[in-house]
Length: 91
Image 1 (tube, helix red, strand yellow):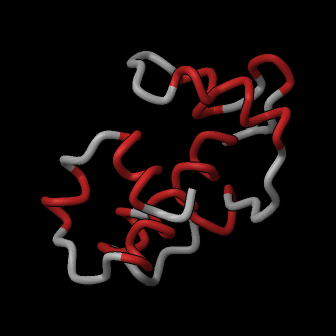
Image 2 (cartoon, rainbow, N blue to C red):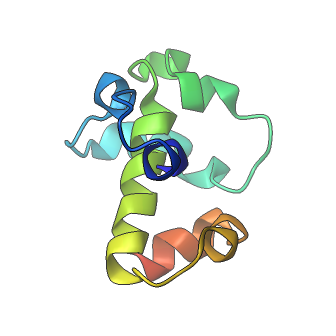
């Protein structure tokens, strides 16, 4: 999401964005939302997660938050925890 805002002409989001929601996939990562070192979730492939699963879900979480809080600065939303973004968005 940050990349899309800074470089609006980029098309990288199209490579990773999956608009569907899969409860089974989500249940595999939900407990790790505030952990560090979660590349296996971001890149996918871990425990059957699709490629770039974490990027896709993260993009949707930030997009949802920003849709509800359009006046929030980049500094403000990038300093929030994953839990805050999820709870204050439409997650």
